[in-house]
Length: 212
Image 1 (cartoon, rainbow, N blue to C red):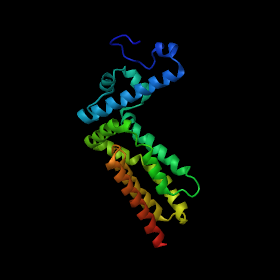
Image 2 (cartoon, rainbow, N blue to C red):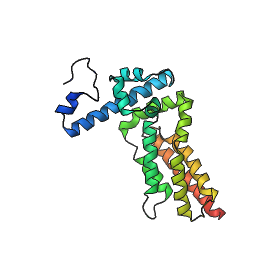
Image 3 (cartoon, rainbow, N blue to C red):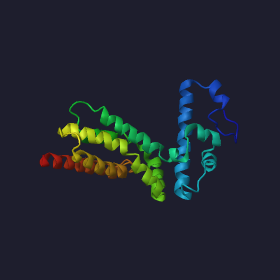
Image 4 (tube, helix red, strand yellow):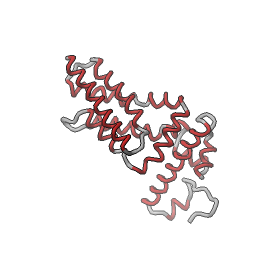
């Protein structure tokens, strides 16, 4: 049991010595989530540049060194959820099953993030990016690997020759759509947005097929 007012430091020997491995991992996950939520809220309210790591630590009720153990920089915190999602989509496109289309992979990836528990963090993320245009630029750049893997998946699906610009154009346009979808909370609006994104991607693929 933590002493009142004591920050829950990641290096706390109490964690290392008395908690079961599963409990330690859950505690670390909760601490990391608290840091992300605190940072997103502060970035939205005060601005990214005006918020310090010490501010984030205080809001998350941890020590600054604990923040540094989980994240190398403020940028890493701001992009943590998006980077993880982008990595997962890149892997899903690369590991798609035989016969699985790029659209099916994208929809499956979007549906995997439809948990109600994510509603609050998605809203915080949306507010953060709306308040900090510089973070939007970084988020766009983070989609490079997704676009590259999407281009390859579409080229394989369509049988287009290497270097054909069509798959890359569709993958780039689809990436912009997906960025807009990431922070829509689960519910009817997100369901409709996913269906629209699927139609958009299918239409781009159909246009490439008809042009061949």
